Length: 430
Image (tube, rainbow, N blue to C red; front, side, top):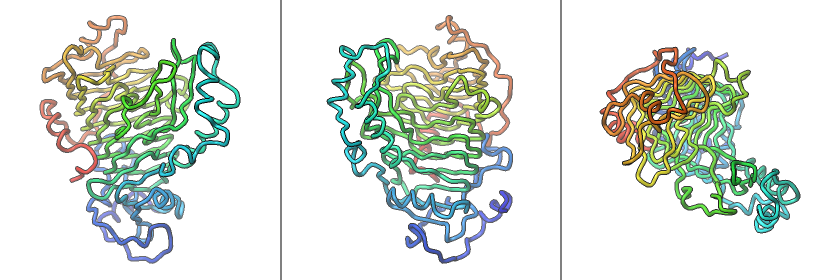
């Protein structure tokens, strides 16, 4: 069995020239100097317990260059168990056939709207019946097409400044040792959102598909990626029944017992429910003692909430920059959830005029939090004290009960906006 120590040794060596048939093997090698990079020692939770090496030990037969979504899915599925490096060149479109290609026979959106109009259906029971069944079947069809499952011991890396995925959902599920770098992922658009008349006081449209989901996996490093709604921000979406026809879910979810994750130098942009760590208050059996995540040197630009929202996990968030423009429907950045132990230190926040610093933190359930050395609009702010003063009904307790030690560099928060602004995101992997 190849050990992680062996992979680290192989990372510094040239791969053997092997010949094998398989998806996208015919493509010539591309020059990506960081192809065999491994997560540096002490760089966040993903460096613990053996570290994260991804596909650094892959041989030539398991090094792929892909230019289409079909090629990517084939490379991910080829030769299960083998370490692999997959280089993404250009933009891969997961939904080239459009929504009509996923629709189940008989599904009719106009009929759906007529059948479940609150004036007809009411607001006191979930929707059901033929059109809802057909909507769900259509959504399953889309899911089968736009999800790509990333296996263990994989490095997935973009080539150059313009590599990415449109409409796809990367699933890092129940595996170990994965690296994803230098990709721009445009959030999938759910073609078939569900109307839930019981969601809130007036009902809501709910959608599926995150750009990336880390589920039950360990040792995952996400670095220099850009997560965005791209050409389809929420502002471009229509309303039905007086509610936004929400076609986006999250940009990144880390859920269901996932553990030992580092997300560094990424951009999360133009999104509502951005980043969730832990997806249920009732998941103690799988999540307690896990969901250990480090977020550092990320840019959260014009996101509404969940940056992140945390349940259960020990989350270290430092040296991130949070920017909300005047047109952003800013709600909060850090969501404090059940049994969470968030440490938020030396982050920078740029908030629009009239937005109180007390909104940076949001209490969902009672849990301790450490917040120190943060700056809001260039000034040092005690986020917990300001929150408790401005939102006394959501009193927060200070002191997360642990001290992060897995940090390679900690910058002065005054320098964070410039550093992150110039270096975070896809196309800036230096």
